[in-house]
Amino acid sequence: MDVFRIEGPVQLSGSVALSGSKNASLPMMAAMILAPGESSLAGVPRLSDIAVLSELLEQLGCRVDRSANGDLRVDSTTVDNPVGDYEIVRKMRASICILGPLLARCGRVEVSMPGGCAIGDRPINLHLRGLQALGARIRVENGYIVAETPKGLTGKEIFLGGSFGSTVLGTANVLMAATLAKGRTVIESAACEPEIADLANCLNKMGAKISGIGSPRLIIEGVKVLRPAQYRVIPDRIEAGTFMAAAAITKSELKLRNCRLDDMMAVVDKLRSIGATVERDADGCVVARSGAIKPADITTQPYPGFPTDLQAQFIALLSLADGNSVVIEKVFPDRFMHVAELNRMAANLLKEGPAVIVAGVKKLMAAPVMASDLRASAALVLAGLAAEGTTTVNRVYHIDRGYERIEEKLNPLGAKITRESV
Ligand code: EPZ
Image (cartoon, rainbow, N blue to C red; front, side):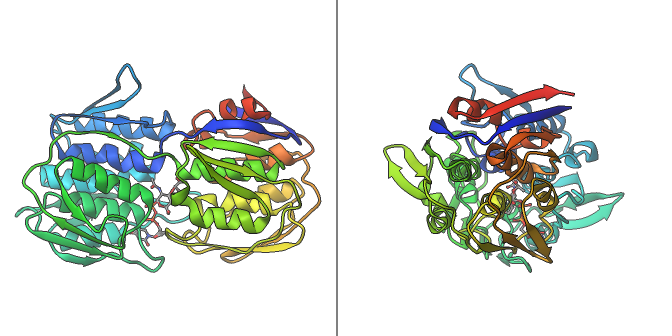
């Protein structure tokens, strides 16, 4: 198992290129099931989550590999085993995004229920409600979802909002299934995340007829077949936000290349209110902080609100603010595994239900800490960059799920992170 040893405090400088979006790549890889033949996706990051979904697609009968230039190729000519195995799905809940495309392609699918994880329950009731509206008959057997469409899928008007608002992968599943349904489907309260817009654009390139892309109302005119396509995924806005927080917490200036600032206005707004500057430039942006970190209140919400995937990183940043901040988590109210670990680094955080009161401290102190989930781990790395001493982050496999060798991106900027196998 790998650990990170992080020396701090450091200052960073220079420029870093963002990788392709993990959360755009995963549903897009599943979408390849809809179009028999070989498709290729450019910009798909080399992450363990991508490897897990590749393994699952191969279990379904697909062939998945990388071309010489690094594009991810999915050959879905054969899909003869529509079963999402528990051993894989339990490793990565996003595997549930094979449900919709498999149902549309094969008419019958078995996928293990995802189960919970460190950031909370991961219910799929909205996914199932949406697919049932399209005509699927769904039951649970031995922990597996069994979905069948004896008469095929038929378009319907569907309200997909839940008690926490829209669902990203629920929208992806229903959207992908609807592309091959008979007639028109309207998804109301669809997720507006850029990753869903990117999926819809990719599906349209495959011959789907989707309109309202980027809005909470998606309209899909079903088609008979989709064709394989070549597509480039958008940059990872969560990786971008993580590096922006790295610049701010280390009082540095960083240039982010390949950054789509328009996808990040809520994050940019918070950075500016905290006292950082964010300036557009030719192919991305420059983020800098020189003065004190001002306190700020953050509430996470579905897009275009502040992303829950950056909540942990910004709590780490606000831990060093000149004053008190309040961070409220409205998407995954239990997503606070990082709070206890940051307090071990001398942060002063008080969790009250779905909120954390962040009393700013003058400095963080290095300590051995435990990564628990992808974004909490990133928060611990950021804290280690600013803390005095050498921080050890255990279980960095969590980080490798969503960041391409993060230490190889941060060290050239001035970080001092060593990866050790223990
Ligand atoms: C996606 O997860 C992302 N994962 C998550 O990123 C991200 O945190 C999340 O969206 C919210 O933005 C991928 O895209 C692979 P949801 P998803 O369905 O789709 C509730 C990361 O760090 N809900 O939008 O699973 C749910 O409990 C990961 O990269 C239901 O109640 O999230 C949550 O409270 C972590 N019923 C809220 O909706 C359902 O059927 C939003 O969840 C589905 C969801």
